[in-house]
Length: 116
Image (tube, rainbow, N blue to C red):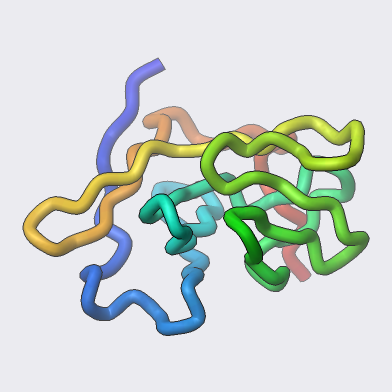
């Protein structure tokens, strides 16, 4: 599967709260600044398809605001529960711009959040 880089925001304009939700090429993406740098995951809880971007990020993990499941931002691994891991995306900074590499193929229904 081929992938392409997509610009998100300049590093200097990244929100002070440490996270940013974006829709890029049909993908819902959550970008977070962690102690290890910028990380990006699919902005969809694998349990009930809720947007994760409304949740807290602590110690490098995002918490689902719907039911509290936690996922590591670096790996997408579910912590302390048996839910499927998140898809994570490579992140780079080019000329001060945060970029995320996303599949060129549009996300399937199992990758899309429920958005009301």
